Length: 214
Ligand SMILES: CC(C)(COP(=O)(O)OP(=O)(O)OC[C@H]1O[C@@H](n2cnc3c(N)ncnc32)[C@H](O)[C@@H]1OP(=O)(O)O)[C@@H](O)C(=O)NCCC(=O)NCCS
Image 1 (cartoon, rainbow, N blue to C red):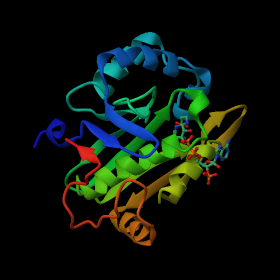
Image 2 (image 1 turned 60 degrees about the vertical axis):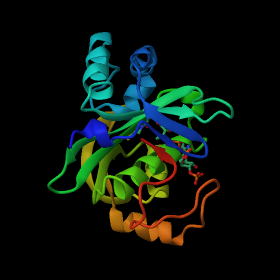
Image 3 (image 1 turned 90 degrees about the vertical axis):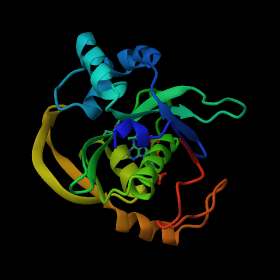
């Protein structure tokens, strides 16, 4: 089945709404990815992306029919979706092994530290495990990005390894940390959770979650 047919139009949380990117989001990407602080946290290369690279990235990985990227919007009462604050995505979807890589960037820096990115990641994991039926989601994060590490730990990722001194940044070497979460970790964690506001707890045997509109 073509990914576009089963990748959702929107995922609705308590704080954020994820929905498909539209071409006009390129203006925000231009701003986010030319920011040195965003580059420091998200890029292997030292320094921000060039404008042409941002455009290529947006066309190939964000709005192309094969991309599994969703825009992160604040959930604003009375609006379908509020302010655009970032983007999250799966890449390297491997159907044979049931795995994918996860990426998230909140490009609007004033929105860091409010739980928006953490909830966006939870929505993506819920979709990956409960709708797509994936087994494993993995990512890598730089050791100095402790906000991201804490956010991933909060939603159930475990640290599974470190590439020692893989990143040169701010005048020293740092480790690149590998993290992953399995469907069994997710279900165990779900089993311990209380039902969330606006939605009942679900099990893996239930049908497409009510909070996902296709
Ligand atoms: C990483 C990111 C997705 C996290 O989302 P977020 O909504 O900002 O995260 P949260 O507000 O839920 O914070 C997560 C945890 O980190 C902790 N934290 C916040 N700021 C921190 C900091 N500067 N240092 C260490 N921990 C920090 C918080 O205490 C929180 O834990 P708590 O809720 O138990 O207190 C988001 O900040 C982001 O996109 N940052 C820029 C790009 C980036 O780093 N992407 C990830 C690349 S791997």
